[in-house]
Image 1 (cartoon, helix red, strand yellow):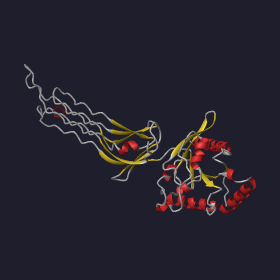
Image 2 (spheres, rainbow, N blue to C red):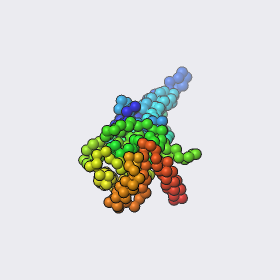
Image 3 (spheres, rainbow, N blue to C red):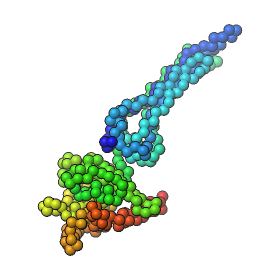
Image 4 (cartoon, rainbow, N blue to C red):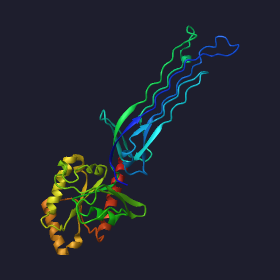
Length: 344
């Protein structure tokens, strides 16, 4: 299925049913009085987070969703049937905005989370409601109110513990396939990955985390070069970024130091919050270098970057170093979870 991370839809709640104008008419019952019932309420439209969905592709076809309207009231004080609510299921991680007002309506992050986005209309009042000691035969009723209508923008931000960041062909897809059961498309040309991929990395018994691989970025992405920065939003929910660097580029003119600095600049242009997220350096493709050359290149890279954070050397192709990386990530995530729980 094609991955779609943005869509627009229209939602229309049901209208309320009109109140009824009626009088009781029975044999041997004089002046029976008013007996018009109220109208039923219109159904509301709800958005529901569904863990079974992972894309907004369905909303490229179905764009309009409408709840049932309430039925009108009837004689003998019968209230009209209320309209059924309408649930619209969408992936966890969907952010919903009102296009007309720009308002953030909700952020669906948990499976089963339900949010009303269009309220149904209220049912009208029948003439029985207006009976009084001075008005024994009211002929007044009210109409049901219209249901709310909204034009919504849906934006999916994948939910993952760890996000992979790097230039095209840095080996991100190979790394996620080596550490999880994800099988993204892998080839020896740039921009093989065209949409985010998720993989569950299992470290031990009951120990696992979710890793996200997004399409590679290039210098000038903030200005629209390459695939642009539209996929960077998928890293905003991650707690940890792995900056994957090709330590042995095929083109010797490609400088790993410049690659890291260029992506740091693009991160800052996109979001200061994203640029400040914890970021680890993962030097990939070490299988293409001998030990002595690797030590020299690594030392030179860290000195030029003035890097003081964690650094890991791996080979996604052979799996070397990936187990240690996974264990370190799991320990870091557990420390963060314990800290969050203690603060709560």
